[in-house]
Amino acid sequence: MSGIDALAGLAETSAPTVEVCLRALRTALADVGEGARVEARTIVGHVLGLDLTGLMLGGDRPVGSDEVARMVALARRRLGGEPIQRVIGEADFFGLAFRLSPATLVPRPDTETLVEAVLVRLEGVERPVLADLGVGSGAILVALLHARADAIGVATDLSEEALTTARGNAERHGVVARAGFVRGSYASMLAAERFDAVVSNPPYVESAVVDGLDAEVRDHDPRLALDGGADGLDGYRRIVVEALAALKPGGLLALEIGWDQGESVPALVAAAGYEEVAVLPDLAGRDRVVVARRSHASWRASGDAK
Image (cartoon, rainbow, N blue to C red; front, side, top):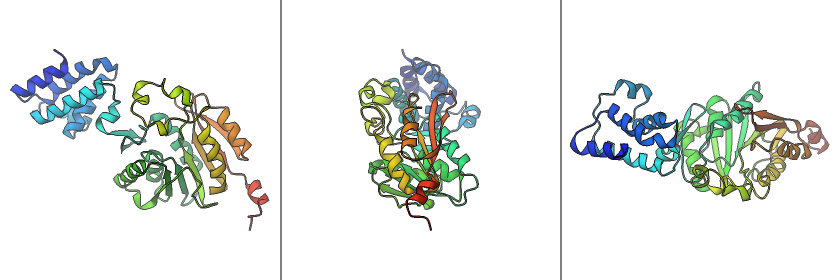
């Protein structure tokens, strides 16, 4: 009998404790790898509304049959290949919890490198105006606005469902009054020379590679947010041009990139006329973020200088 079946059977005869549920789920989820202990806690805590401290102190708490049934259902989904974040419907990012929808990527720790890079480069900029292109769940923009209480931001996305999800996460974390949400592609609808920073985590997987991605990504993340065209660079080609018009002179462009795009994306950025182009690594040492500045010289040459 599997751990899940054993847990379901216990619920029919008695009220198992929190600790019994945790043990049963750890056993049941062993096949997902070394994260079984953490994922068991995640499922039990999600169903019972308990954080880690609550789980540790409440081990003797009886669990009702309805609650056990929910745990069993979630564990079966996880064993069926759904990422744990999809199973519980939210993911942690930059110390905040973000609700997910089928139209949004699961925000990943590597993307925190982008948020950190932007915050460092906005130090000293008062009341910065930000744009997040392809906002998805809102993780990047909401994290930035949460960290900078004086900032305001605009989010764009082709998906209305993604925008709704992002707006909900902005409300959840108290920044929705400083955020606007616009349906559209990248920066084409943004006001010229308005933004101190334009950020994006665009689709960057080569079309031919998408179907070979890990099943947890391929089968559960939206293809619209993964497929970057034949060479993975379609989104970058548009962003570097459209963001150039939206940025203030000297404004910051910050882009997440794939691990193998540390040469191709910076080359596109430099060719578009940006300055101070740099590639930043994630915690694993892989190329992860490209940062650059809109040139003051190109702005003056455009005839817009006052």
